[in-house]
Amino acid sequence: MQDPLIDRSCRGFAEALASRQPVPGGGGAAAYAGALGSALCAMVARFDEGKPSMAERGDELARAVAEADVIRTELLGLVDEDARAYATVSRAYAIDRDDPSRADAVEAALHEAVRPPYQIMGACARAIELLEGLSRSCSRLLLSDVGCGAMLCRGALDAANLTVCVNTASMRDRAYAREIDERCVALLSEWEPRAQAIADHAIGVMKRGQSHG
Image 1: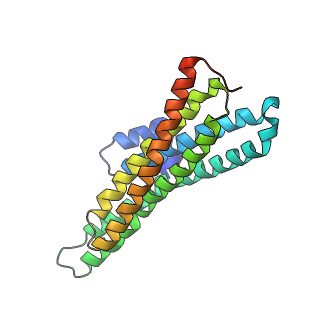
Image 2: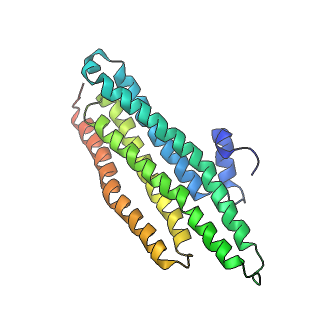
Image 3: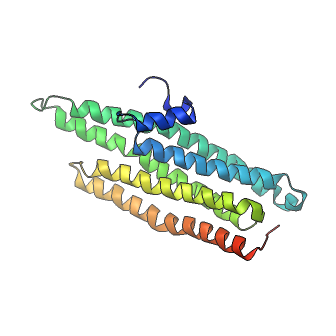
């Protein structure tokens, strides 16, 4: 890689994704989608934080802003971490097949490669939890942004899981692979429905024309 992927323009990042290069790939796209979802979370919290009608929730909203910003920064960093992890796997597979060190190098690289996408999943879960809180009290005009944030984080969660699976599927240590896969299933089982519920709630409120504030 040359410059950090995340320092490129939106157009530049999309063009890099479309190029005939392995990175950025699905993992980086997942991290970026999650970062966009958490950015929407921070935006909504910032709008509500400044409203006199939300004064009683000022501390809660300030914490939501701070946490959403932390999550966004974390996910942006994971774009490049995922690319670096892929590069390590690629180098390991490039070792001559007759080299006795190859198998261990590949296994170690695969173990390292599951970390970024698994961290993406955890970060997206935290963002979804923040969005849940905002969905219960934000202005109707901001509900669509909350729902969009939840759907972006859900998509990122699913995409990151696929990136985990492509690595665990090739591991020799099947016990460790199963452990990681089971952790991912647990995350999906909890946070996919919660993200969908946020979007469903937003649609329901908007269609009824009801406002929280």
